[in-house]
Amino acid sequence: MRMTDIIEKKRDGGVLSTEEIRFMVKGYTDGSIPDYQMSAMLMAILLKGMDRRETLDLTMAMVDSGETLDLSRINGVKADKHSTGGVGDKTSLILCPMVAAQGVKIAKMSGRGLGHTGGTIDKLESFPGFNTGISEETFINNVNEFGIAIAGQTADLDPADKKMYALRDVTGTVPSIPLIVSSIMSKKLAAGADVIVLDVKSGSGSFMKTEEAAHELAENLTAVGKMAGKKTVAVITDMDEPLGNAVGNALEVKEAIAVLKGEVKGELLELCLTLGSCILTEAGFAANDAEARKMLLCGIEDGTALKKLAELVEGQKGDPKAVYDTSMLPEAKVKFEAISKRSGYVKHISAADVGLVSMHLGGGRATKESEIDLSVGVMLHKKVGDFVEVGESLGTIHASDLAKAEEAARLLENCYTLVPEKVEKPKFIKGIVR
Ligand code: URA
Image (tube, rainbow, N blue to C red):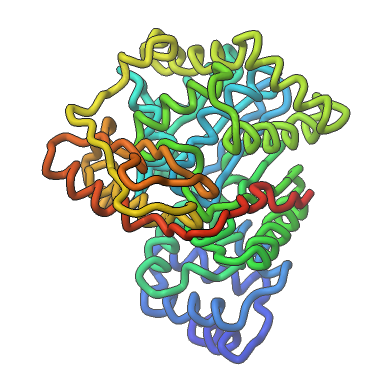
């Protein structure tokens, strides 16, 4: 088999065979197929597409490129969650303990953030001592003992995706549905859970700028998950403004804790109840969504969801006292209000630009090697639909020094679109694909 022939076949709109797809993924992972050939192939896939069978074959070839986690030593139903990525997305920190408190096992591999803000792993490191680099043995033992573990993705899991994603990033081939589906689902399938719930973001702050595109992605993700024998559900949610109010690692942890304590409600709680209900019903723990929501809310009211977060932290050598006393979490030296010079109703907040404000403050990574400052970020006080008076604060900037804070405040104002007429908040949950 020759890679040149396979590239030409896809270039001309052909359907690749299972053997051709496996040859290409194996060759690219072991280095026998060079970047320039894989780049041409990725572009051909982006332009000509792939059918469901090809997408599944690509996904499974990527799963088989490395090790897979064997969760068979964990008793009970194992669930995993993935988000296509958004600004201020601290959902896993809330959802995972909420669901684990109901008895579904959470064995989650998570990534670090690149760009905008940190990933779940970075956020968890806000807890003093928290270890995300636990061994597979500890990971399995913790899920069995506490019902929950969240670890950094190991290098051995899905090496094809690591290489292909890095190449897509620099060849203009990220926004291709078969490539996104195989990238996400290969990681999820390699991580071994029985139930997979996907939060597919739609809007200006996400990959999928329109609701139609997000729907198409959700349909493809769930179809491939099911073809691979997993219970898979996708929830399509709005990402036209940052999720919740906090953007920045420790700030997001504090907001997550506030939700678990029942102090913060709104879209963030709604999202966790929706995703959580999907998990509980698919796992057979609840007969329907209404029952599942009742169970999840009960876990917040009686404190068991918060206690589960403390167990997660303790199980991974963090200090669980920080869950109950958030003053132990990293705290920025400077707090500075971003005062609005304009008035009007908030029509839009550019989530991507708010992410860049956090990055300017040191809360995100420019390169994989960058150190991030867990304490910095923005606490938004105004969201879409709110009215802003001249002189009111749009948000509090948490910074390491005053110069950075002042610049961040200026940048934050530019993230807001204000209009004179009243603004209707768009629907937050845009659909569920089961
Ligand atoms: N998230 C991933 O892991 N891969 C993609 O291709 C897009 C989003």
